View 1 (cartoon, rainbow, N blue to C red):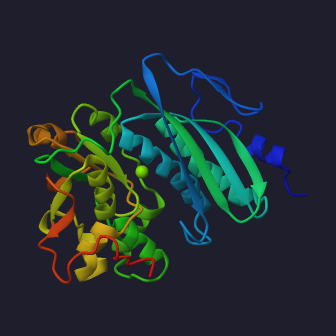
View 2 (spheres, helix red, strand yellow):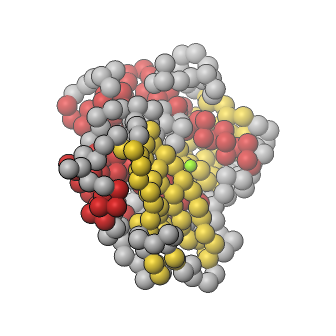
View 3 (tube, rainbow, N blue to C red):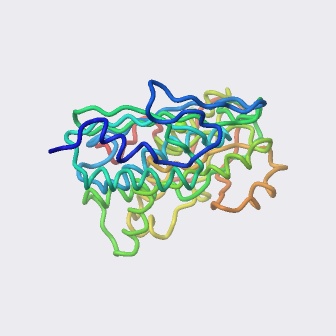
Length: 317
Ligand SMILES: [Mg+2]
């Protein structure tokens, strides 16, 4: 007999994630109770993954569990917040215990590693949709925002944007290369690493910050719009990895600019903070351009047709 809703929650999720002393009451009542510390603001975010839209059908359930938490943690990282409590809403076509065991393992592993307690949620029947709502903590007044970039600030990005989109391309059979290069980019799509410690370290250094979920250039456009400035990016400064270059060829720089699903941090800071930022460690950090007066994102030195911020959508056809 398939598991019922309450057995499902009890078996797989009642004890998932980190245990935190600030959880007064976790899974099992009508609502969870948590005790935020004095001197902090709550950073709240939610993200949904829909099978067939945000990930291909049949994806490794552990990777789905990891990704749905990782994309939420990435939003907290972009605010300079540390994760605390999460709610999970799971819509499943059926209660497949093997699938649930792997999904819960992927979610639980990342939650424990990042100090995130799973304090509640809901399960229901339907097409596969996973949603997490998350709460993080940031000292009052210290959150990073999209607004705050000023003309003359440098533009920084962590990691290797574009690899995740290439990984999705490999998973969907649209890109192919050596087994080693394919493994690197597939892992980037399946197991994104939220830049939590970088986000915290950027408090007081970065003037503005956003995480790269929809593509570096488009997300930089959002940061610029929020800050009331423009940006100039140098194509030669983009961190295109050897794997991405081998898989995507002449399209590599465009994939780096527009790929999406990277969950890296894109941020700005005055040039005087450059050395401190580059010494932070943990993730590769690249300076890719500068903030200018005006509006819009210009990419200089890109081979081929001019880069169209709105129109380029390589992987969505
Ligand atoms: Mg975001």
